[in-house]
Image (cartoon, rainbow, N blue to C red; front, side):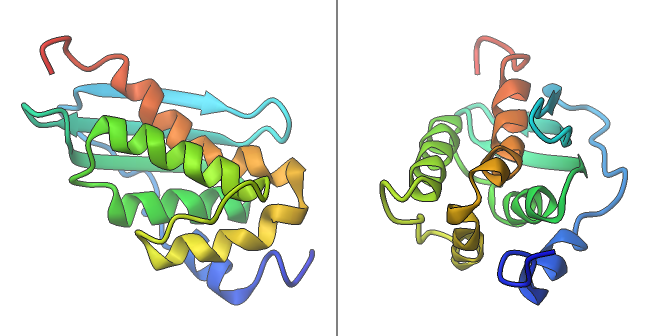
Length: 143
């Protein structure tokens, strides 16, 4: 295990997700899997009438980086518009490829920068975003 990549802060975040957290009346639910590493993330979302995330539940069967990324989203994504979620995902993806700065909206995102030199880990970090966006496909069209 690379200590720069899997440091204490990443491991703390990874352990912060609540196991089997579910939303009873989710507007959308999805599970996505990374074919590269086998990580899986499940997302339940509830959105408000303006298309903002009102409630979010993420479950991860992933490496510490995927779990840490999911924990960051679990703690911060409520209130984001779905369009903001999509833009944030793209910004994180670009930052991981060193084609931009890691978004500064949430300080914890900076911890994921250690993965820039490990392209095989990028998919696991982006997987929680992809799960949320996949769950939005099931949100009622009027939202």
